[in-house]
Image 1: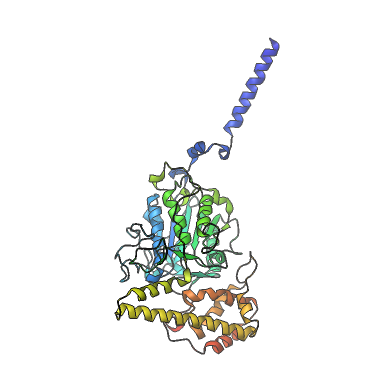
Image 2: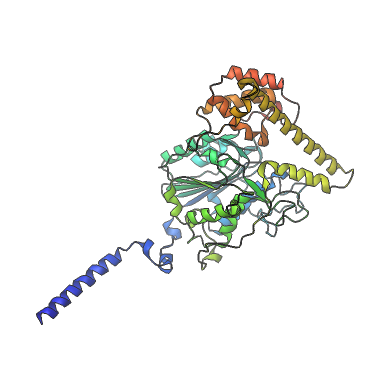
Length: 484
């Protein structure tokens, strides 16, 4: 009898200890069906803020504004309020004469209108680096134009930034000058963190060499998580382009979207974002953007900043469409894969070539397309040749090309002295004209000139030797201003 009582006492003690342990059991060890009970709710998330930026203009850059409009629709369906979504877009494509569907913007071949209802917070010449930084920092007094909306966030809030445009090593484009430089962006993010006005911030960046914006610059500890469309050395890609198997309707001569951008957005369209994490989306987007790790076309999607944030649910940043609430996370999906993407820097040529090829003979449209195509090709050759001559003048005919193309080791920013980079860009453009969205690819060459210790006087002499005076074309710095 004594042995039985002792055994019962031990059993009771064991069961009580087991219950105590079970009550503390980490939810990460539970079954998936049990985990869904702890999905974040509206009350547990703070206010969600979003900044959506298309940094280009022109119908040949259709895809950037289409991306931004699509992102707005995802967040609107996800429950974000217009007062918390701030949109930067030039707004020159919906009613452009080249738009075959006036007033409508699509982001995929069979997609619906993503333009309807999009707030016009900052349009046209109000899309500036200063306004972007002022909006992020919540500084209404520093704004020039626009709706006046800013991120008036608090310490429990989440911020999402999506930026789609052209880029180059250490720089992002804007439809106005000057361009956005990596050091200024990261400094602004540091200021936002120091203000204590957010809990965490997620930044999705679509641009060529977009990894260079954060490589060696963005420290950990800011509660910021970033993914980029490409690493620090490669282009990003347009998709749903003319000539592709999964191309736009035949009346469109332009790419409808960007590969990285449509990858994360089309995934967001079909997933339960209460359940899907940033990390899970990153892997799906990485696979599709790399064309299933073949890199025949495509690029390396990268991550920067505080990696722990990627374990969080997407719902905390962009909401979730209630229509998907009963869905479970799908590791793989049937999103379309293009057979041929277009390098971001060649998408404008593709547009004007298709417009020229399909326009009626001897029509004004055909003549204009031909003229713009010739101008663009001439500008490209001028910029490439000018930079080559600058390199030869500074480093000699044998070492010039190698010196300009050198890539620094991973983990280092593209340049040490950002003030030097901006000065050298202005010096080059003073003599040779604006770099433009195409010429941004030469930013690494100018950074290498700074890293080699070349002075401003020597750069001015080399640029004058290469160009003499700015060309009289639409990209002349005399007409468009300077990139820096």
